[in-house]
Length: 114
Image (cartoon, rainbow, N blue to C red; front, top):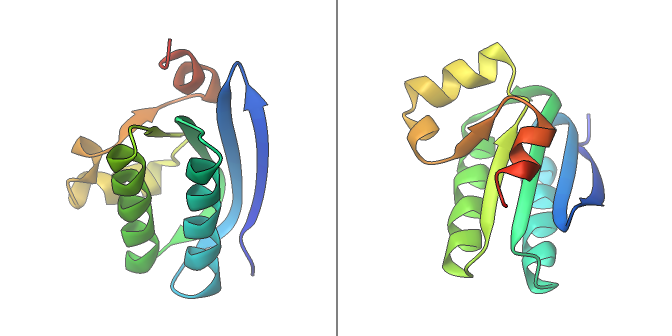
């Protein structure tokens, strides 16, 4: 199942709603390209809404980390919201919760940029 991404603007923040799986291959590449293009457009505030992510593998985690680093290196900020309990657990086990700024709701994530 391909990863669907819906991008919209909320108070000057680019919100990308993700739907599907973030796995090795096409899905990871699509997400990487999406973040790259937002950064290229000069977007400095990006929120990834993980509400409809059904599965993420190690490559998917790697993609998120890479996206976070490329955002940071360009003076931008990448935040995550709506992590399911499973995904939250994965980030906790891998110690990636300390890397990402994570919020329960999209509204909190958007508001955190103010």
